[in-house]
Image (cartoon, rainbow, N blue to C red):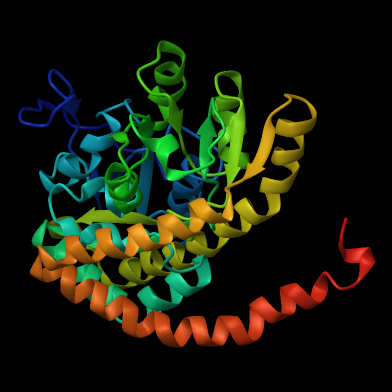
Amino acid sequence: MKRRSFLKGATVAGVAGAATSTFPAPAISQGLRQWRMVTTWPKNFPGLGTGAELLAKFIDKGSEGKLKIEVFGAGQLVKPFDSLDAVIAGEVEMGHGTPYYWRNKIPAIAFLSAYPYGMTAQEQNGWIQYGGGQQLAEEMYSELGCKYFLSGNTGVQMGGWFNKEINSLNDYRGLKMRIPGLGGEVIKAAGAETINLPASEVLNALESGAIDATEWVGPYNDLALGLYKKAKYYYYPGWHEPGTTLDNFINLREWERLPSDVKAVVEAANVAVNQLVLSEFVARNNAALKTLVGKHGVILKQFPESVLASFSTLSDKVVNDLASNDQRSRRVLDNILTYRTEAVAWTSLSETTFTAARFLYSYNKA
């Protein structure tokens, strides 16, 4: 298909970080559409940015060119955390990020990403797809003028990068740490100062001393960001984000204009990308961890049991307090807890006992 030239754009006003930028109108000719997707990730960033690119590719191929999507990385059109605003305003048609970035608009939306000591990636997927999470997500995103899709999962994350050992919760007092979402609220309750930064700013913040510690995702992503250059200790597990989901959000007016066959392609593409992004993290994390430890001398450490137990207790209090202050958060959390009880019972019987049994055999211990 020959791409029709974009119409002359108008200067965007009202979206932070987008001043003086122009957003050309989407080309529509004989039922063929050209959309733009803005992401919170750097262009082609492993797993996250490449997941957005894969989504665009699947939609193009599946729709036989009826919907082409040009992907813009963080900062190319708007600042990373302005992506949702640009989609809401209709200045671009589509975005890609993770729900807890938007909790300043709807506090309960953070639960769609992950919550401390919550659910694994597959349990989180199960909740959204079969446990009522999709309906709750659509309710929140529709209020923002967007269509919501589940569009990736990082799996269980690492606990973070530190330049001192963590022996107790006292070590978090006064600590300046990059950590978003509900996990950030928990360490704030432990006495830390939390700062939310996009990927492109994390390493510089560590170098300048703007932050003392950070978490991002896990070895595959963290190696790509070069976090080992400015932090010494790498802690696990990521109690704060055990199965973080990504979101694909589409301007609702543009979504409703799509013909039904193209809508079906977008839905199917997100289902595929949701699984493939998780698979990529599972496949790449261990090799990246070996590089971090073997080549770059990173010190890998597990949080002491006392720290994990303390954070578990504190997480229950913080999350329940947040839910008590917001009716919708209470409804979302109650829905999660009902589902989680059943999911955890089965996981404990199946995967937990299997992984324990697997390590009874020496050939699987390597």
